[in-house]
Length: 155
Image (cartoon, rainbow, N blue to C red; front, side):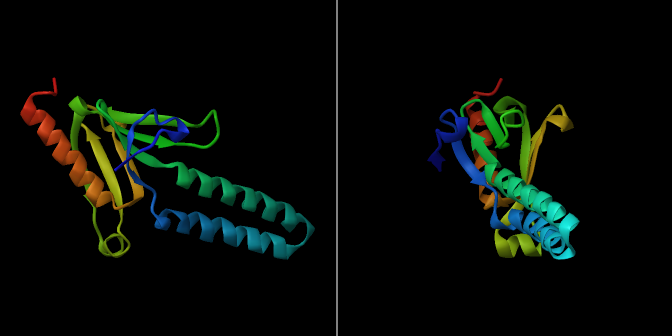
């Protein structure tokens, strides 16, 4: 795992990032709207430009989604606009368990939906779809959490 100090991660380790499969839906959806918009006429050009702007925003946003870890917990960093950029997370002492959801396509593309559960509040858990090698990240999180629990570090 790499330590990433760029993008305001403050020395947290990057566990995983979005997979290429996360880009498929925005590119197909907003790309189709942009192409149709440009093909329609003058009003379509405005629609096409708006759809193209939305496509660029969605691609940049998907690129910004990162799962991180540090000594205090597991964190999700996302956002590109200054007022929408943020980090949310679950502290090690509050983690219930991390899961990934396998199916045929996720197995083929190695792109999993992962969930880091909060043992007290469902609203505070981290759920991230289309994470590259999410199954490996989940196993690393659970292993580290078990080691901390066995060592008595968690209060």
